[in-house]
Length: 200
Image (tube, rainbow, N blue to C red; front, side, top):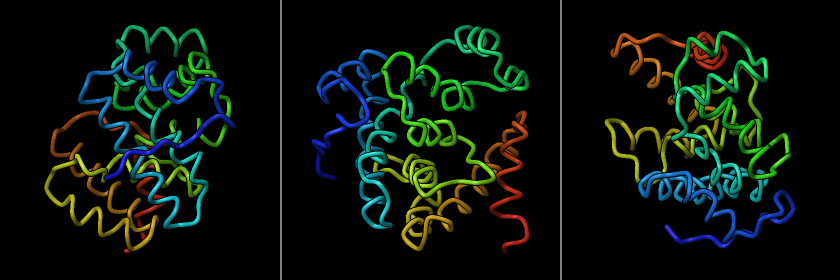
């Protein structure tokens, strides 16, 4: 997939090089490569489905900005900012999206609510999702570096429509969590009920 030189100056005061440097400082090499692939995948999906290409690229690029923060930092922010206390029963898989949007806004200076909401929703989706939300949710799942059973089916689903891609992803995410017998954050079930239940 080709590299992008997308200009995000309408949404962030940092230059592209500065933004990349800030991301690279927070992420492992593998994670840094992942966010760039998600950026490119999000741009492609936005072009395919007539969505906002700049917002999609930016949200894809920064979606995992907080992925490698400590559990202690996440819990501290949840308490200090009086986020939903139920978040304290969750883990990084949820926090880096929901709480990550707060860190992106306050540390990177990105205040666009469409971008921030897409970051918030990229891990568990939401009952109601915009085209941008769906794009980041799906792009994170199907970017070219992903290699898991059914990934080609996931890519085919996304190519059929964003809604089909969302449904495929939430079904497979729930199957994965159930197989691991781990706590499932309730809003994940809400997303399943909204996007999958009764639609078969």
